[in-house]
Image (cartoon, rainbow, N blue to C red; front, top):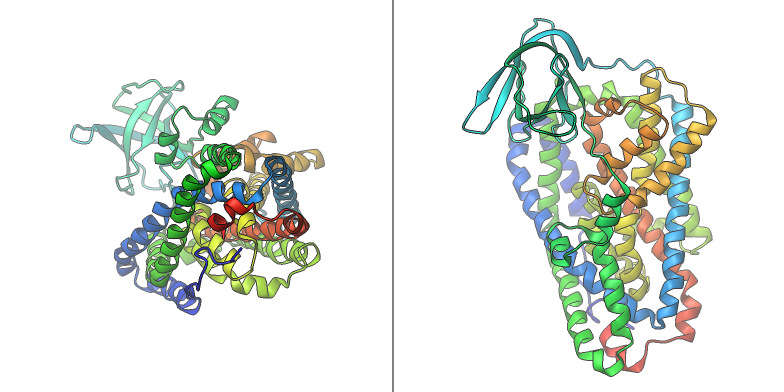
Length: 509
């Protein structure tokens, strides 16, 4: 079986142009933020082009991976190994995060921004054209939090018990907040009095139930799951479809040839797209830095220094996990040189950093793992899509550090048992909410609630969360390929004893 997805010479994915694009993006976004906002659209187009390929790639690569593994009973064995090793690496990540949280004390001496204004008088102005309203308030010394996130925060009128959903498409002013609609505690729409006193900004976490998780795993309509980019059920569907197809022998070969051709075409399209990746990555990085500069008081650098101990603890933990825990696994278990392996994956790391998406990085991950690091195409097609969905080493580590930071900021001391609960909840939650939109935020809320920490503390970290998200995504995808390398090492003996069936050999080579 050829290591090249197309069975031939592969195009070289640029490395140095991507590195230069990241550096230029940071400089342009910081020093020329207005220009950075404009070039962001080049990055969004690049990101959309990557996402276009993700869903068909997951389906075709999983089906080809299942068929390449041969005996359907072996699929269960390798699946258990894959999930088991992913859980082990995630547990190592959360343990590292806990250790850093204890040693670094990132929330010590943290001055929290005010989010409650009990004495402020307010008025509500209806905006018929948009269907919403504007919350205006008075108070010479009233300062809103430097970063309000409409996706995760809500306004509560404390004297009326009404809650306002913040409009994400409108600009938040110094003395006014655009509101989409008002509702009560149950979510029922209400019309509050137009004047009053006292309001606060609080977290608006989505409630996650066992039914929500089960429904996300097994949707009613697989086409709808594709449209909503709900990846976990697509993996389950592809596993079942590929398993059944593997039992058909020659009767299934024509369909398998078509699926293989689609898979090869997508990989080739990714290789071509990566030739213009520096332009897209420059736009994404410049746009993100520019948005932070223009929306944060004092600019992004000032805001970063305000929470520098927290940001440093997260990035330090990510560095330790990537270059101690995962590197040792790669060296001792997989018997590979971590530095050579990492050098071959540089485009993957930079793509993950710029896009902040494991899914968008998946096509690049598979291409480089197979072509550069010579991981079996069968293993890469099976293990990496699962990892992009359920393996969140970096995210789980950040959640533990964030929980420790919030506890310390509020002057709450966690017991040893509470710390262990943090580690276990973050480890299990990283997989449990894999198919849910905004999984990082939801699982962080679950982690905070597991030990009784205030979910409002999420507001303390929102201002730099977008940047840390890029670093933890890079660690997430690095963990994916490390585990794929380990599985590849474990399965070498099996592949020697169970070569691909003759009727399938042309399709998967």
